[in-house]
Image 1 (cartoon, helix red, strand yellow):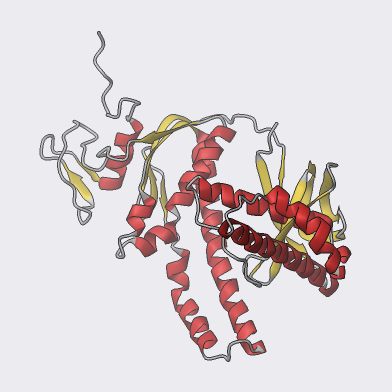
Image 2 (cartoon, rainbow, N blue to C red):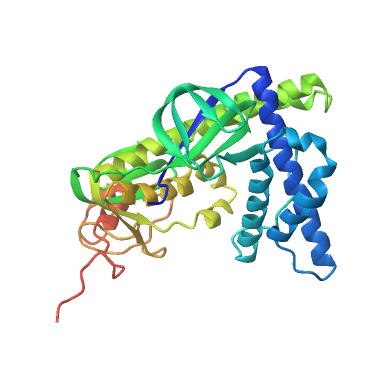
Length: 367
């Protein structure tokens, strides 16, 4: 069974442990940057580089020249080459940009394993390979995992890992539901339930402006600059955590309580190109909401149906099927055919509920 559940929690480290974590993260970054530089050099010379050859070259000729590398876990540089190979695979498939060099203090992370043996985690104190005993702020369930990733975010160190866990299908309250994601309201369900957008970034804008203005007045590279920068990072982390927590609660409710969930295929990247809507769309986290729904529906025994991108859910009358234009400024759908008056978001969610594989709200005629 493939890993299907992941945990991330904050580590409670002393100064010695923080230094050890920083050394391993620097080791991983150094090896990744060395591999990327060698890859570019080899390619410019007309060769076809690969991570297997680079790893052999590093192990036999480069690593012996740096004694400090022997003081750290060898698993770190092995995963650095694996990550470099994955980055190039994504680039060649058109899924990402060309790999870039890593910078100190930005995305500091490393991965270790136990040489094929499982790592046991549980409780508050955990015995990790090479790193020995580390403590977490909250207790973890007793479990086994193949590898752990440790990373730094806004001055704090976190541990993340995958584990194998079986989820039983939940008892559903409703057979089918349409979910209309929007700007004014994050999600409107055809059952009548609404999830208002928290907009954590908008609520923190004034404070962010103040701390960023404070940062701009510090001398770059000084201790005061580092302290002010950390303050900005912590505020951004808080905004992201509030958004992610709210989305998890919303998507879990939808997936647990409905057998079939119908959503729109929103072009989020295209919507972000609109400078008038980009901020609120990013603040609501529409792409993340869909990503969570995809795996949670599978986890809790629900089916996710994605309506066609050009399905006019907001323009159709949920009562008679009449189609009429609906500018964004109009919040009430007033049907010119049957006289039905209904909130435009709720109307769209009702249309999505009746959407079928044929791309319409009506079933095809039999025969």
